[in-house]
Amino acid sequence: MKRTNKRITLVFYCVVLTAAALVLKLLQIQVWEHDRFEKFSSRQISKQEKAGTPRGFIYDRHKRILAMDVESLSFSAFPGEIKDVKGFSSKLGDCLNMPPAIISQKLNSGKNFVYIKRKFVPDKLLSESPDALKGFTSRMRELKKEGLIVDAEPCRYYPHKNITSQIVGVVGTDGAGLSGVEFMLDKFIKRSRAGDTGSTRRGIRADNYQNRINVSLTIDSTLQHIAAAEMEKIIEK
Image 1 (tube, one colour):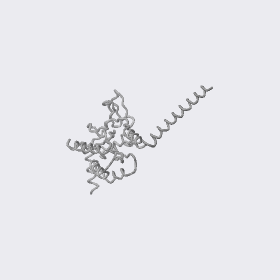
Image 2: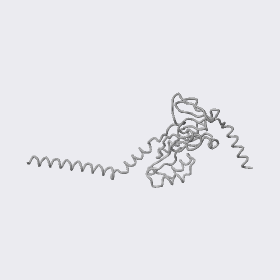
Image 3: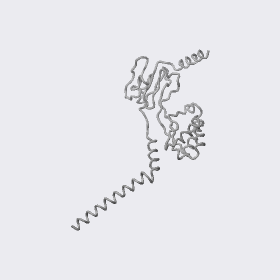
Image 4: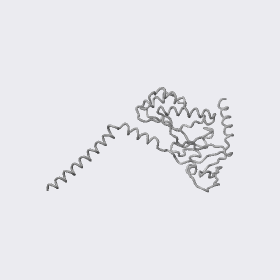
């Protein structure tokens, strides 16, 4: 009988000690080190890949690119880690051609984590000298030391902007076609099938290139630019 009581007492103390250890661990996570774990969790979320299905190129009749996938940049930060919000906003705004007041507003929003700008493609830098791109990279490196987070994300890029947008169309943030050829051939453009070539209809020719199905249109981007320029002259008159 005494042995049974001792065993029951031993089991009881083991259960109590285990429960106490669990309570202490929960207090550590939820109360004492809540901010550290929350920050760690936010970092993990912010680094998750948001890559959509790769899409093929869209060309004009002379194989000039009308639409393509490029690597864009997304800028975010933990406001609590930024010591000089005004200075930080001024320097980043200069790099992104973005009003510093908007950046400061985001950083002073009271949120633990904020996106400052997403899907940024430095297209002007791509067309300028290598020194301009190096300067941009150098400034980004300095801002990262001050708390800036830079992530690469896939983005749809249209070199001719709105000149061909009525025909080519656009895609949404999820990478799905919303209008024009991007919408009409959405499933086709983002599909990858080895050995499928030569499909043609309504002035659209498709060919498989580097495991992506690309589309060639019968339009001429140069003529589109000329037509747009003439239209602007007529409107100005």
